[in-house]
Length: 89
Image (cartoon, rainbow, N blue to C red; front, side, top):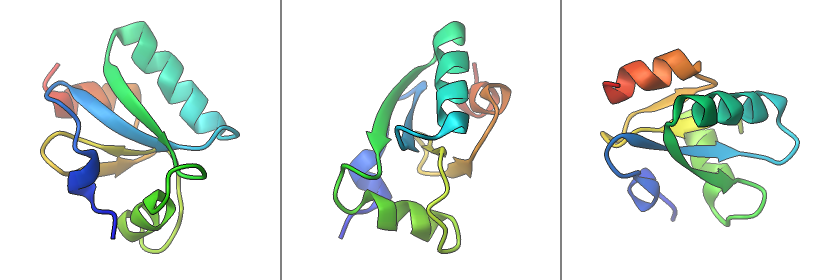
């Protein structure tokens, strides 16, 4: 079974679960790139077990973007400002 610990990001970065067609994901990636915040993108349609992991984090819904922080916490469709704040940047 896939767990969040399989995808924990390095300090000061995030893991973003996404899909290729998600407009909210594209927007967040653009904002993170602009702000110089590092991220690892994981496409839940391509990486086995991640769609179920995202659903488990979101009450059964495969909602993207779902972001995983280094402390193991997560956020669904956060703003870039929220990501920066939670990373302490």
